[in-house]
Image (cartoon, rainbow, N blue to C red; front, side, top):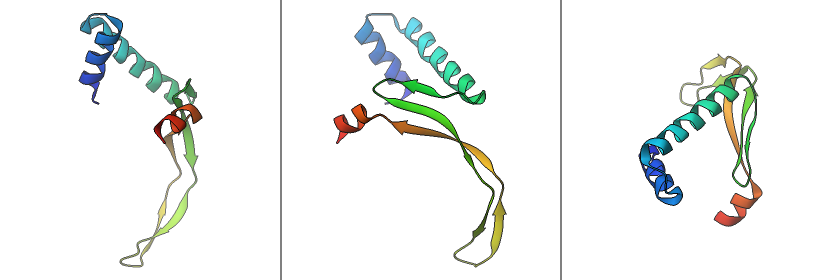
Length: 90
């Protein structure tokens, strides 16, 4: 499901017009992005949580050439699925 389909389905379920649903979805996107930039965790009950994961700097090896190179430390956005969602999918 893409963003347009999400907005359309949300409009059908809630009986709210599409333009208002679009504002809600875009506002939710903004809030999630902003919270992650600040290093906050976003927890959505029965779905899961988004959080920032720090990856340390490390040495890597190209398996094809054998050449070693270093990768700087970095931050990644991670998602942990809730047990409720996991059980409903499996």
